[in-house]
Picture 1: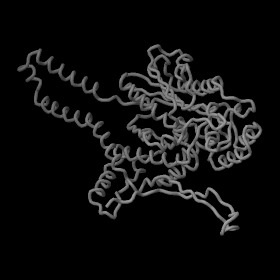
Picture 2 (picture 1 turned 90 degrees about the horizontal axis):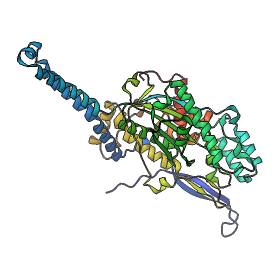
Picture 3 (picture 1 turned 180 degrees about the vertical axis):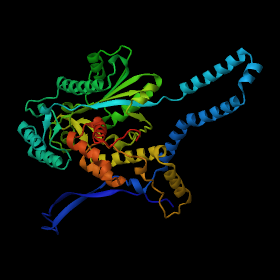
Picture 4 (picture 1 turned 90 degrees about the vertical axis):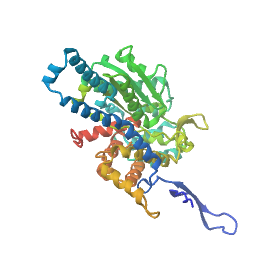
Length: 473
């Protein structure tokens, strides 16, 4: 007998008042809408994603399993041969052939073994002080702009109060001007300030020569112009005509990780190269000056920010790089209609453009996160945790749930997208994370707001500044 599907529901009162007519006239009435909440991460496991994770593990382990075996066999046979044997029983041609074979084997091994991807350094841009804006000033300027009705003002004030954003985030005040209209010129000027500022800081820190960069990837969700944002960087810094250049658009907060994954693959195709990844979002181009509530949320959360990341697969960079990329797993939910429609750029009834955020976004985001963690677990969890997990599956009774591994044993530090206070609270509760694990995300949200795809780099910078990350950790 098939088990009933478990639903994760949360009630919400959407209408209340007093009956005007009928047998219940004068009585209090209300209607309740039931919505799904975050899936229960720690009480259910989708074995499909567990299987996928182990598939990645086996595919990547073949090099590290096969190579030691071959080395042991070759070393055992070579150990039986003494110098006198080589000199007396082998002529010079045989010795040259043997050494040549050994050199060829070493070359093939290093050629076939995937090169490690190193994060040499990164830089997060801090906008000038004149762009700082408090929540109170935000509401005041929004009211003075004359573009929002009172309901929209009250809604934004309520959202900001519970958002987790502090009073020193950065926002271009130009969007509050009564005569402001979204233009490509303003978008490009903001993009230039953010991207060039982040790259300048990175170049100054690493000392890299601009001409040594062979791969450039820029990601920005909304602003996608011609020439592209990557072309703006190439023109400004006069990069090489041989550079491999990419601009990723329309991918939102997840584009930063997507860009890193693309850079890793390109570095595999171009050994001994440097890749520059720039992640940003242009607030002046995402601004919405209408009154539809679902399109006002990005106004309240999105703030100015950009990060520049230098990646390398030079083997010598291992000694100076800050980090080495060990595992990267991406989970795409675009085939699901509810996920596909959860966030979209659209026009309201009056033709004003903005980003619409569906109420289901927390749920669909939670399901994507759960699938991603489940896939990643076999690649990072200790062997003891994986043993307990498989033992619980093989020997469990019908009344028992699978053993859920302790993910805190795999992750010493966590950088969760600084989306909103509510989302961070839900993730902390669901994954049973301590306040220490959530500190970087909360502080980044407070100090910088939601900087979209670059926010995880601000969180990593916070952990470094607090001394929470040690060499070799």
